[in-house]
Amino acid sequence: MRSNPLVIHRELTLLDVHPAQRVCEIGTGSGYSGALLSSLVGEDGRVVSVDIDPYLVQWARCAHRERGVRNVRCVAGDGRQGFAAEAPYDRLVAWCTPPHLPKSWVDQLKTGGVIVTPLPVAQVPQITVVAEILVDEDRTPRVRRVLHGGYMETVSSPCDPDTPTRLVDWEYRLPSAAWISVGWRDEDNELRDGARTALDRLLAESSIRVTAGEDIDWGSWRTWAAATDDHHLTAVGWPSGGIAVGHSTAESIAVLRYDGMILADRRASPSLRVVRDWFQEWDRAGRPAVEEYEGTLSPQQDGWRLRLSR
Image 1 (cartoon, rainbow, N blue to C red):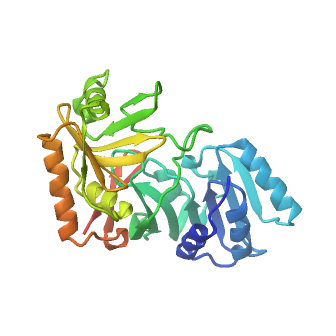
Image 2 (image 1 turned 45 degrees about the vertical axis):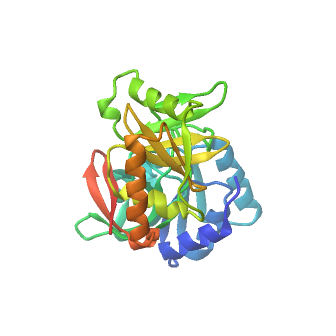
C-alpha cells in the first residue's frame, strides 16, 4: 500500500512525538510511517505497528530490517484492540478509521497522551474527520481539534478498501454496483425494504438531476450535512461515481454529489426540498471548513462517538 507523504507529515506533526517515547501505530501499510516514527522516538524509544493484513506486516518487517530499523515491532492483529502487551504508550496514531474511538486505545495510553485518528461523524460511511485527542488526568479523552481527512475503515480481515464494510443498508452488485446507507435504519424492517426502495427510486430512469452549483467543497459539504445530526442523513455510493450525501425516507430521496449535481427521485421530492434547504444554510454560513468545527466525544459501548458543532 502506498503512503501519502504530505498526509503523514501533517498527522505526525499533530502527534508531536518526542525522543524516548513509546508509540502505537494502527495500520502498518508500507512501513514508511513506521520508519518516520522510529526516527522521531530515537534509539531509546519504541514503536509498535499493528495491521490486520499479515502480508503488509511481513513486508514492513523486511523493509525495516534491510534499512537497519530496530526499534519498530510490526504485529498482525485487529488494530481496534490496540496492542496491550507493550502498553502504556505516549502516543497513538491510526491510518484507518474505527467505527468510534475505541476504549482500548484510551486505556493503553498514558495520562497526557495524544491520539491522532480519523473518526466517523455520522451514522453513514465515509463521512470522517481526523481528530487530535488528549487523554486528560481523569482518563477522559478530549478533542483538541479536527481536520479534514479520512482513511479506509478498520476491519477484522483484509478487504476491498473502496467498498464500505459498515453501515451499508442495501447494495446491488449486478448488473452494476451501488449501495445506500440511511441514518433511519432503526425504523426500517429486517429486510431493509425502505432503504432498498429509496435506492431504487434514485437509480430509476425517471429520477432527476439538478445542478446545485460549481466548485463544491466536498469536504465542507459532507461535514456540514453530518453536523446537522439529522437521522435522515443518507449516503449513496457507486464504484465509478464516488459518493453522494443527502436526505432520504422510504418515500423520497435526494443526494448531492461531489461535482455539484443533486440527484433526486422526483421534482416534488420532500427530500429534495430538505437538501436544498441544507445547501442554502451551508452557503449562508460561508461553507465552513472542517477546521472550524468543534468536536465532542459522547460515551457509548466500548468507546466514544465523535460529534461536531460550530
